[in-house]
Image (cartoon, rainbow, N blue to C red; front, side, top):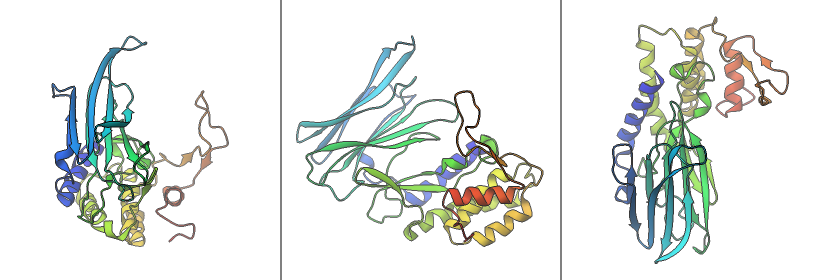
Length: 299
């Protein structure tokens, strides 16, 4: 289910967003491409990418995406992603932060694995344009990301999913996630999912999610319902979402009722006493407060 949801989410996003802003400034290296290097340019900014192949110290045949960035012909910085088994990257020059004079250079690489991971990094300048720094969005589930202006608002962002929902109340296959929208501000990405201008994205996602209720088989509902309530919160309808959840959740499912808030040690033992919730609604309430979809007061 999660894989089909990922594909459907991608379709929903593309329907809302259309082609990504600055699409001509994207260079792709993927499994089916014979290209291992390339160059793109946007104004004074030029970015070159090379997938450097080597046999690493573990004896594995790997490639490492390396990007060099030039402004006016002079190198200002570089990005080197982690070694991966097969080339699958997106290189993009796109304006993510209007407070500086140059567009950013984005490198998004799929690290491989059944459910993980996409590694997205950008090289951005300060307000003077003299000093460039790398900012990492972090690892996320799924394939490579690009930046776009999905609703033609004049600001490019990265639209992804909230990976905190994966495995929280069900297996990967039974997990769903609401959209999560990232904006680059200086040297950090901030979550702007709740800004009112992005409401159409959440409405579109919710429209697809709502089709779940008409399905004949809803054997593992709790992983879906957590994301559904969160999505309803994003559109200002959390109480309606909560009432629908109460009618459909599986009270016998124990996945997600025991939580190790302190994290695990190297032996897989919780570092502190685990929290055990009495019911799915109780565990879901705590999780939605933790992730910001619900306040402490339950609003």
